[in-house]
Length: 295
Image 1: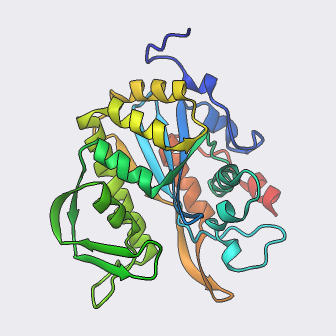
Image 2: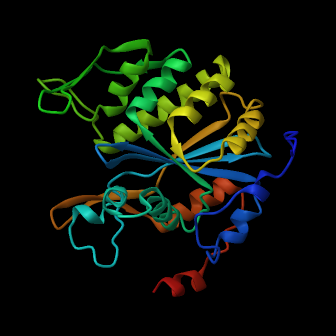
């Protein structure tokens, strides 16, 4: 049995879910990182996409949120709704998570994805309860009522600082807009993503301060993932050295727009390149040759 001391290059053990011919692949590969795509699923559709990138040498975690409305057209796809990246998980007959991972990697200019984890809201509920709740400062009264949802969706979280238990955490993450005169996020879905990032930051700090092994065990037991248990244990052991300040969150660079009656988030390749350069602390290897290949 291989003993993990916390100093090995874990990348030697990690498969890639991306094309190794990516123009950025060598630059990505040289970094001692593990990248895991978190796929939040609700009613068979991708509700949340977050790519967590853990730098094992620098002891730092970067999270990139990919809006579910990200424009991702594909051959043979004509429906406006199907051109959104969140539709891939629902429409792929085989390899739903793999297809989603490949698309996210493509949008991120070939950023390697080692593993994926499909997360249902019931899993979030269990994980949050395993860490004793997540502290959050709720900036406005979150109120929404949909009696026609299955089961009926009721969200009622008062304004102010509080510890969200599993049930309230799910309400917080599902909230999009207010009802019965209550307000929602001024920025719409982008505002929701930013709120989710604040939740992840707080949960990250809470897990580190509470009991990371216990939280990791709950995650392993309840998450559908291709991450082997042994590898998860190695990563968790390494993560013990992290602090609550070792996490940075990013939103996939782009801008909102409409086409054929559908709302999309259009990725900005130039700004994505700048973001990746910052995350990986590298000089980008793209240029005119890369642009030519894409034409």
